[in-house]
Image (tube, rainbow, N blue to C red; front, side, top):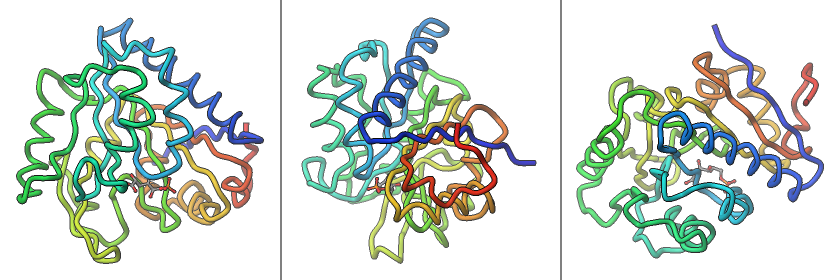
Length: 240
Ligand code: 6PG
């Protein structure tokens, strides 16, 4: 059985940022009210760059544990680093206490060991569900986090974090797995641009490609925040 995500289509990027940010603030406030902490996995890539500045205010980041859904195998100050993107757009401007930020140790020559350590950090002092909110993006090939088509990470059913060879990109990545992401209390996708329309339609309606298992999960709410271009391939569904 598969679930159906809520699709929120915004007429413009500023509107998309506003509705997505309001949603994240609400999830954060509810988590802190219920459990005293807000455990979030941030999305990487370029799309969240517009959202994160809107989250500098309105969230009590002193009560948060901030993880990353995935990371590129580059140094933390590299322009390709998801950590660097988040640091510049959210963590530094919001003065997030460094102890609240759990970065993948990409400088470790043994990325498998770095992934095991990351899993330990995610499990430390917590129990499933490990995350209150997983923020995710979507690639044109239907990947999310670093769960790419044809990679070994897709078959992982026990580990919460792994290092994975992504042959199609000729690189290794670090990523949270389906057990970690599908198990989050809440999942939000942020998807913009016409180049994502086919993948979004395939993931939501046909139910295949790596992101489908998360977008169509039944274990809790999934909201897809997208623009009209990204939603242009969705049929038979009235964007709310
Ligand atoms: C990454 C991401 C990845 C991203 C998609 C979409 O590290 O690249 O975590 O899953 O969300 O590739 O990327 P864009 O937002 O740049 O289109």
